[in-house]
Image (tube, rainbow, N blue to C red; front, side):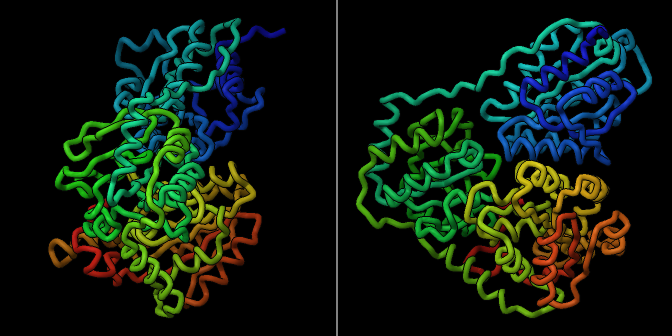
Length: 547
């Protein structure tokens, strides 16, 4: 029997953590790890750029709650992971990043491809460590996953020196234990009940933490019981069905969003899984005069506009259920529906918009009509993200994936691939601008190889649209934002997938339905006209507060 190496035990530890996929690119310094993966139950997914692999791990973590795993070798392989690992850090996605490294004996001096990866990644992960000895493998793997998956989730990083992974080791994985959640005290629950019950105009501000912790059903029950309206952040779409009378809309794009949703009149704001990295509280509490009840998994961040009267820290769904049983409120209380009326009204009117190039609302109307309640829309970063954040309605939580904290372009395609791996039964549509799409378009080959039937919708206008829009607003002109494009249809076909370019507004819906019937990835190119301002009306405010 062959002697077991540290890399063999390392992979056994990954298996013990329930790892299904490792997304990445192998290297010379990870040869032993690759050999061990080849003999394991884990599927190694070779990608075409490490950033794409890390985005896939990010998406896997978002959708499953279990840490996604990405791999890069030392030097450039590791630095290519940085953007997507930082995205996971700010959007609270559990990820374990693995990087190769040179032998231990070379680290004290200048050496080919050696850089301080621990130092580089330290600011964008919750914890990282060098596996400096084979004997610590079970401990560091268990810790990497526990820290990554504990609230608030994020990335961790393990550096794997080549010589350590090749050494002999006889050890076993440590048992996997679920992260422990605290429980709010009786005093805090009583105080929150008092504040909410006595409030004249309370409102819920629901954030991504409520999706991450699967608190949607508890939130829906809470608002049905109390009658309190709910506003959602971009990343919290679908926590309450947009058709529910308690849903007042998605806030955070423009300065008047909060007023039109009822925040100006609100005396109590119940922040449920709300993360300050999503939207600054200064925009909805500019006078610091609102009573704030925080329901979250960890204590509130410090901010002069976000000083809670009470914090209920623990399992969000459990806390909401307890409050629903104790809060007594008169029936029929609702927040302002004006934001909802303006946005959904504009979306409904767009169904008859025949202009070409197409308007953003018309494209989003067609996508919403084609997708089922539980299907997935993935948004890249650009002006289209603001339109999706503003206007695309969701029935269910976790069905609209948006990169909001770091907001890195190139997010959509690799995220959509991972989403299809996690949920092959659901339709997945990725919306990208022509600027962001080319940043990770090489992953079209990965999608084709894996036969992940993702529909890539590329909005084409030949410029970095969000920057042009903001330059026009500030200076009356734009500069340095234009570029040329390849023939996207030929590009997609070169990767072996069907593709179409729309030539009329009415063509898009039929092409999309055709693409959703395929069992292979595809692309639809949509010439887009951004002349319609995403602000839509002066009633929503002229100042844009989202980025």
